[in-house]
Structure formats: C-alpha cells, structure tokens
Image (cartoon, rainbow, N blue to C red; front, side):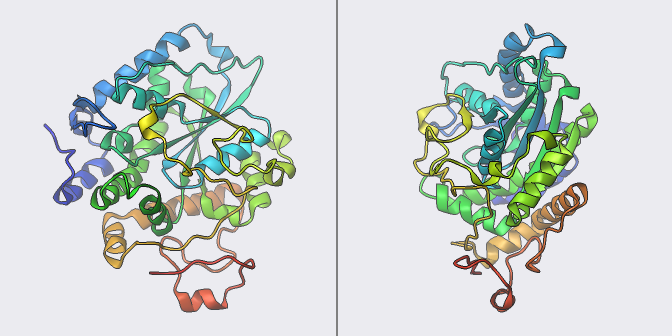
Amino acid sequence: MSILTTRFGDLNRLSELMRRDDPSLLTSWLEPDGKYQLHRMRLDKMTGSIAGSLREVFRNIPPHEFPMLHYGWGRCRVGSTALANLFGVAGLPAYFQPVKAAMRNFLTNCPQTPWRPPSARDQPYLFSKEVAGPYLMAECLFIPLQILIEAGYPADRLHLIMLDREPALSLASWFTKWSDRVPRRRLLKHFVIASLNAIRVEAYAAREGVRTTHYVHEASRQPERAAAALFRRLDLSDRFFAGAVTEWNGVEEFTSDRSSLIFTKEPDVYFVPGVHRAGGSYRYLDRDSGSVTDDDLELLDRMGIPDIYRTCADACARELGISLDPAGMPLGRLPDPAVLAVQSRPAGSRITAS
C-alpha cells in the first residue's frame, strides 16, 4: 500500500491515520524524488536500517555510560538551532540532528558514520536537536527518538523536548528558505505532515516512558527568563548562567567555527547557504508572514495545526512556570495589524500580516 503521495486529496486521510498513530503508516511506501531520496522504501524498513547502523556503536556502550540526552524535536524552523547553540554555550555538547543526518546519508546511498555519544564519565549531559521536513515525506514521518531507542539508547537516559513555533510564521520561513528547491504545494503538504507528526512522536515517548517537556519559540521573547526556566525543568540549573543567553562570541552563522554546535556529516545536496543564520544571542526575532496566504491559513486550521501549537504552548507555560503572552498576542494565528499597532514591542521589531 502506498498513501504517501503528494496529492492534496490524501491529506484528510493521512491526517486521520497520523492522529490515530495507525500502524499502516509504518508499512507505507516512501517514493524517491531522484535527488534527496534515490530509492523506494517502506518507513519501517528505513527506521530499522538506520537503527541498525547506530546499534553497531551503541552495543559497545554499557547502559550506565550513556549520558543523559536532552532531545529537542519539532518541525523545521521552530528555533531549534538557536536553542541548541544556547545549550552549547552553556557547556553541554550540542549536536545538530545526528539521526536525521544518518537518514539523509541512507536515502542518498552515502557512507554512514554512525553517531557516537561521549561517555557519561566525560559528559554526563548532552543536547541534540532533530527536526521534521522539509524535502521528503521520509523526513516528515520518521521518529528519531524511536531510532535511538531501537538502537539501544536507554529510554531512562532520554528527555524529549517537544518544540513548536507559531505555525503561520514557521510556514512563512519554510517558503522563504526552500521554495527554490521544493514546489510550494509540496512544501505546504510537508509542513502539515511534519506538524501532525508531533502527535506520533509524543505518543511514542509516552509508550516508552520517556520524560517530556514542551517548549515554544515564543518563550524566547523573554530569553533569559525562559532559558533559565527550561534549564531548571531539565534539572540543569547548575549549568545555566546569564552569559549563555548573550555571550555568543559574535556568531553569525551556526555553521561557522564560532558556533557551539557539533555537526554530523550529511550529503552535500542538502546544504543550503545561509539557512542557519544566527542572531548574535539567544532571543526572539520577529518575522513577517512572507508569502503565506489566507488559503494556507485555512488549510492549517482545517488540519488542526494551530490547535497542536496551542496545546504545546499551554504545556510550555505550565511546565516552565512562565507567561508566554506578554504582548497580548493570540497563540496559533498571526496577530491583527490593528492589535499589533498598540502593543509595546522592542524598537525595530515587526510582524506584519498578509
């Protein structure tokens, strides 16, 4: 059976399957595009193959030597790279999507260099980010946490951080960064599927007994307060200091030598110059809605994407004990321009509605 095509007519059916975490998803076929994925495969076979390559490394690590891994997951463009750099500046080894890099090497027949975490004796705590999308259905549907656990990473040494960002602005960023590489309609569908996959990721974590924390990018409007609260929630208060938010050594690109991120080799075809621009410190950067249309917003509403975001935002505020909405902005939709005009915002920042 193959339901993982690019037709918009499949979205309603696929949405229902994802909400039920239906087992048929695992045996559906992922079709190649000839560039980012070179061969047809089933989702479960891809998951098993990547887990198998990691298992060759993990099987030689005693359970007590696995570090505590704080594992951020969300769709692309939710502020995950800046968050990872924050943890890196705070002194934790901070990895940039090591499981996804392994998947991309697998999809393009490139050599694998399985990720090897440091020993807990040397580094008791790690951070890693993984994101869903944007190029392929495989990137939108895989569950990297599952791959780690099936490879042998102990579930009690994992802490999942569910990441999200206001959907309309996140989608605008997808269009800005990748519309020259992926057709717009396909990007929109992949955005929806990657967003819905949060349901499956969190359900898998619950089944495996993995502790979960929620964090939305909008919390970084109060960068120091939000970061301190997140570190406290993760039992890392002793690692947090105010300079981790501000003292970023003038980093402009997260791929530069000044970045605190650790990258895993992935195929050159995936490299996009300038996609990981830094802000010089950990803070919220206002963006406009770009080319997002009313029809796009209607589709997100129909698929329940703003509801997923609001659920994550509510959990973030509750778990971290912070207020997420200091400027009075509605969660899940772009603000009305008239409301925006009377809000008190930092000088030079802006959000506009399409």
